[in-house]
Amino acid sequence: SAGAQPVIDCQGKGRAFYFGSGETEDSVIDNFTIRNGKVSETYGGAVVCKNNSSPTIMNCVFENNKAEETNRSYNLEDGGAIYCAESSPRIYECRFISNSVTGGFGCGGAIYCGSSSKPILRGCVFSGNSAGSGGAVGWVSTSSGITNCAFSGNSAKWYGGALFCSGRGSPILSNCTFSGNSAGKYGGAICCWSSTTATLNNCIMWGDSVSGNASEIYIYDSSASCTLDHCCVDDTGYGGQTGNITENNCIHQNPQFVDPANGDYHLKDTSPCIDAGDNSLVPSNVDRDLDGNQRIVDGDNDGTATVDIGAYEYQP
Image 1: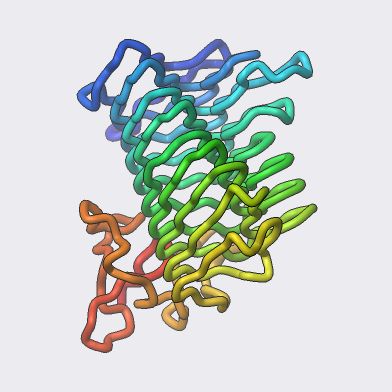
Image 2: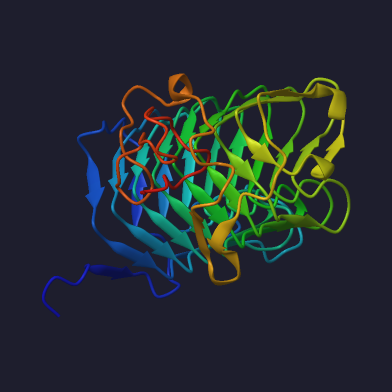
C-alpha cells in the first residue's frame, strides 16, 4: 500500500546485511522492516558489523530474527538481530520485536556489541526479545551511550532480562525505561558482570522480575559497579554486590505508568517522575523524547522546565 514500509523478509535463510569493510556512517539502512533472518551456529541474525564498520541504521523495525544454537555448544551465537564487533554503528529510532538468540548460551536477543565497539543507541524500543543473557542487549567490552530507549517484556534464561554488561565496559544509559523484563537467575532488568562500570541517568527500573536474585539490578562481583543518578528504581530489587550500587538523588516510588499491562509506559499526570530528573544529565545532542516530543518541558507547571525521569516526557 502507499506509504508502507518496505519489507526485507529473509525467510529463515540467512541475514540481510553484512558490513565488514570499514563502512562509515554514510552507509545507511533507513526505513525498512527486516524480519525472519536466521543464522545457525554463528552471530547476527539480520545485520553484522565488523572490522571497524560503523553504518547508520535508522527508522527500522527488526522482528523475529534469530541466531540459533543447535548443537548444545556455544559458537558465538550472539545478536539475534544485530551483531557488532570492533564497530560503532549508530542505531536510531528503531523497534526490536521478538528477536532471539536460542540455545541458552548466547547473548543479546536483539543487539550484541563486543570487542571494543562504541555503538550509539537512541530512541529505540525493545520488546519481547530473548537470549541466554541480555534478553534485549548484550554489552561486552563496550563503552557507549543508550538514550531514550524503552525495554519491556524481554527475557533472559540466565542473566540480565533486558541488559547484560560485562568485560570492562562503561555503558551510559540516559532517560531509559525498564519494566516487565525478566531473568531466570540474576538481574530482571540489568546484570553487571565482571569489570563493568555502568551509569544510569534519569532512568526508570520498575516492575521487572527474576526467578533467582535481584528483580532490577544485579552486581556480579567486586570488580563491577553501577551508579544511578536521578533515577526511579525499586531498590528492593538490588542483588549481588549491592555495596557497589551508588545512588544520587534517586526516588523509590511507583512511577505510575499509564497502562503497563498493555505496554503503555508514558507517565500519568500524578507520576513522581515528572520534572524529577537532572537537565545536565541529558546528552547535549538530545532534544526529543522517545515519542519525538520536546525532551525538557515544565511538566508540573512550576515555571521551570525540568526533564522527566524515563523515556517519555510528560506533555501537560
